[in-house]
Image (cartoon, rainbow, N blue to C red):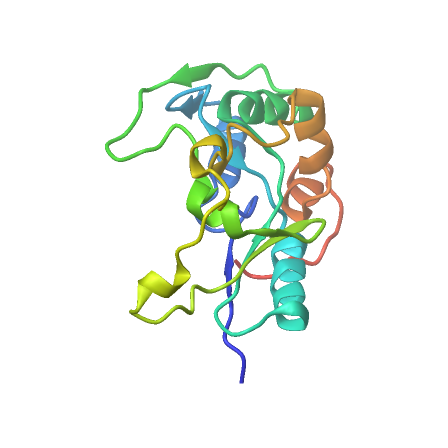
Length: 188
């Protein structure tokens, strides 16, 4: 048995996503309420979440952590993209950041990025399997952690409104609610 982990950001239109809330607000003619238009989040479809898990099954070693390289975008652009897709004249109302809310989300720390293996669409971060005798692991010439950045939603590929509309248009919820298509949706 191999146990490995996956870590990812927001799965678009899933439980906890703001997309269903924004759609509800648009349909009811209410303002779209956002806390901070510059807040960024990773954008991942349910299919991409499944691909990440399957990739981890296929390539994982005990204790590995797999992270999907997902694009990101601002909440302001997300709200605008939904407005445009719905052809709505809805106001976007900024209500202020809630307690504990982050401006961006981090998927890998700089310390993890030092040892991360780039596997195309994913990062693989091997487990730290050292024992408690750390002295044997010190060596000269290790990569300088101070020049490496965390992998977060502010420093990855950013989607603009047009890019967001394209991503959103692939989601079953949007295809059903906005375009009126008869699609089968998984519960979530």
